Length: 210
Ligand SMILES: C[S@@+](CC[C@H](N)C(=O)[O-])C[C@H]1O[C@@H](n2cnc3c(N)ncnc32)[C@H](O)[C@@H]1O
Image (cartoon, rainbow, N blue to C red; front, side):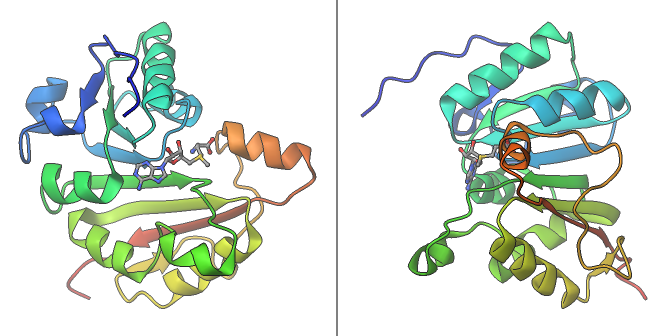
């Protein structure tokens, strides 16, 4: 059992201390729409986005304690109140802590690629994850996935193209290697420095009634 460095930040929530489906408007003190970042790492993307968009409340999830600590510190330095950093596993957090039809955008940047063929079943973004996420998204919610790993990028591009509940915002392309103005993450910068392409995939939740 590792000793976790305590995180004494007003922006931090540990998953097991959050009540089931909390009133996020009470947590944030306003009714602004919720944005989710899954696997926030050191919080660089989170802080860039939350600074640009004070009209949204950002919930950043990571099960890596040190990442949560760094994300909280970064958010506090930027004096942002529209952020909560949650230490939890993303799927269990979604099931336990979100209300259906409550999320305005989801960002997943450079998730663990599990590169070996026998490891791929451990990847986060697969059909079961999309099925889990869908009911929590509001109509018009953005779903953005980025990866430095070609095989993961192409798999998620094909997976999303098959989803009747989503429309591709990058049409006619299934992916791009950049989206203007999209904040770079630590992992993106690391892989770009090695000359690797990043795969950006961007979809929107369609209206249920078509
Ligand atoms: C490769 S890092 C990328 C970090 C950051 N998004 C970036 O692009 O620099 C993946 C992050 O996702 C977190 N992570 C992976 N699977 C997760 C899950 N199921 N629930 C919560 N966090 C997860 C890891 O702890 C790690 O911090």
